[in-house]
Every structure is written in C-alpha cells, then in structure tokens.
Length: 322
Ligand code: UDP
Image (cartoon, rainbow, N blue to C red; front, side):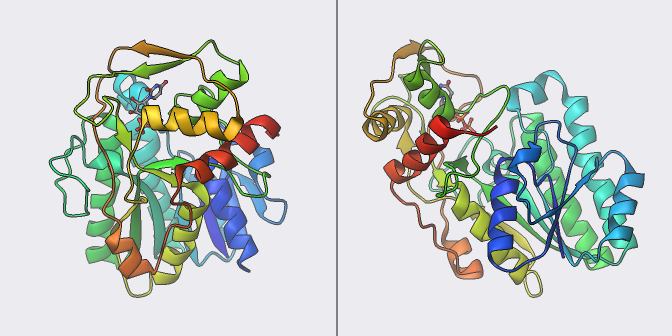
C-alpha cells in the first residue's frame, strides 16, 4: 500500500487518483488545513494525521502495511514563508523528520518527495537542469532544499531510497473534471486569470512588463498536474534502483501575456487586465531541462500545448466542487 501524505491537496489528490487508476492501493493522510476531503478519491483510505504529531504518524504505520510514501504535505506560500519562517521550518522540515522517523522505525525506506524549482533560486542559465546551482531565495525554497539534503544523509546512514521531484509550475485539472486546483487564498496566475474572466475579481494584475523576455512579462514552465501525477507513480516504481533529484517541467516557457491570451481563447471571453509592479523575488524566466525525467523515469509530458492545459483548468473553474 502507498501512503500519500498530503493527498487531499492539489497535486496529491491527482496522484492518488492516478495510482488508484493504475491498480495501487492507497492510504491518504492529511491534516486538511489546506487540503480538501472532497478531493480524496473514494477508493482510497483516509486518515486525519499531522506531521507535527508523531503519535498520529506511528498509528498510521501500525495500522496499514505501507511499502512506500509519497510526501506532498507542506506549506507552500512563498510570501508567507518570508513573514512566518518558523511555521515553514517546523511544518516542512521538522514534519518531514517526524515522517522519516516513523518510516524508518517501521522498516519503510522508499519515499518520493515534492520538491520545487524554487530550490534553484535566481537562474544562472536556462533551461534549468538538475546540476544548476541551488541557492533558494526564500524560506519556502530553503525548506525544500534542506529536505533534499536530509534525504542524501539518510540514504548514506540508513539506506533510505528517495526521489525528489522538482516541479516547475503545476497547472490544470483532471481531464474528467472530477478534481482540480482550489487554494485559499489563491495566488497563482492561471486560476486568478480564470476568476477574472468569470468576473469573480475585477482584473488580473500583471506583475511587471519590463522583464528581459520577448513580451516583457515573466516566462514560466507550466506542467499539467496529471503529467506530475504520472511522474510520481513512475518514481515510486524506480526507487528500487535510483535515488536522487529530477526536474518535472515541459521544457517550454509561456509568458504571463501568453497565458492570458490562451485563457481568452479557451473560454471565449475577454480577461480584464491591469498592470502592476514586479513582484519581489520573481525571476524573468524559469523553464526546465527535463531530459533526466525522460531518461531515468521514462516520463514524457502529454500536455505540451498551453491551450490544452488551460482547457482543463477552465473546465474545472466553471464546474468546481470544492
Ligand atoms: N503573476 C502575475 N499576476 C498574478 C499572479 C502571478 O503576473 O496575480 C505572475 C508571476 O509574476 C509569475 C507568474 O505569473 O511570473 C506565475 O506566478 P505563480 O504565482 O502562478 O507561480 P510561481 O512562478 O510564483 O511559482
């Protein structure tokens, strides 16, 4: 059985569905602070557990026959991590240490982890491969880098098997419309653009138009959440002979303006726009070199056109259940 920590969150819930669709048995543990109970597939077992409560973790490992863990449970608001680093270091780093202790004391040595391209910090070159220097510029990115480093030490000392998947910008929703993205507060570009189109907010504010990019707005690599889910299953299957870090992105960059145009095409409606200043800490361009994921995991992203990603996001945005 696979334990999915944080399986009620955005990427976690899509991974749970994908695992179940591919014949795996799954137990989801989540504290439901940011996750949604309704996002958890009815075929999965569900346990209310918190990484900061070692007792609840022990109970989990006592109750279920767990062979591997996929670990999504983390706080992930960059701005908040600057204001409240303590919350991030405790929840993300201490929480992962608690999880590792529970795993090792129950003989579980396989973990796939949600890492992030935020561990790279300001890019020195693009596309970004896994050898790119890691100099995160906020506490959120630092928590993820620390955990990657902890895994390497635990591998040497305790034989931990680990794959850290460094996501670029997760986007979209399940093709069948059953689950999707729902953050509160919402800070991400694509859902905010779709909400502006729906009239739920006045306009989308474009954070900076004077970047050194073709249209002056920031370029990011938007990777479909179902492609991420697939990569997690492939990573679990690969743990027996590989440990390390792997980028997950399409390798294609889209600018903020391109996202807005694609959202207008997909929805058939105009998006109200306003122009704001740059957001602190936003690099001009981030996109992945994804060769390692292709070679090591045999992974190939299926969604390589931004319109196709936005179509699933729009379908979810107009029919969302939670
Ligand atoms: N962005 C924007 N307006 C918004 C939110 C985001 O212009 O209201 C831009 C942001 O500057 C970045 C891109 O959209 O270049 C993606 O931001 P998001 O917060 O979705 O993801 P991040 O790249 O920060 O992980």
